[in-house]
Length: 78
Image (cartoon, rainbow, N blue to C red):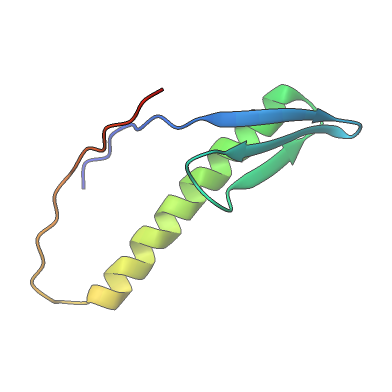
């Protein structure tokens, strides 16, 4: 399967213990880090894991069924 890139909005909140981070468009994808760079890396890694897990669950659910998969776009206002 070809993989592309999609852009999301990462939000970083400075806290006493470093940075809290979340993705505005992906509920439940939250991370933290001692530095902004660490929080950013942790957030990217977690988002990738979430997508992989969702893809694996979908494959398990669908099994050998005949399905159509296609890319789609969603317009948004930045």
